[in-house]
Length: 55
Image (cartoon, rainbow, N blue to C red; front, side, top):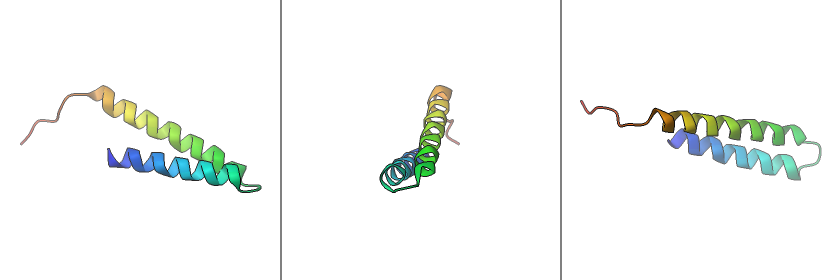
């Protein structure tokens, strides 16, 4: 779960830098792609559901 939150944080930072900095629009695109990947990973993990058995 921590990885997903880290990916979302990275996506937000890249998006802000890409939107504010002049000529770095590609960072905004990369930030959006990272955000979509984080949402997809979170949805896959949530959809799997259930708890793992304790050993």
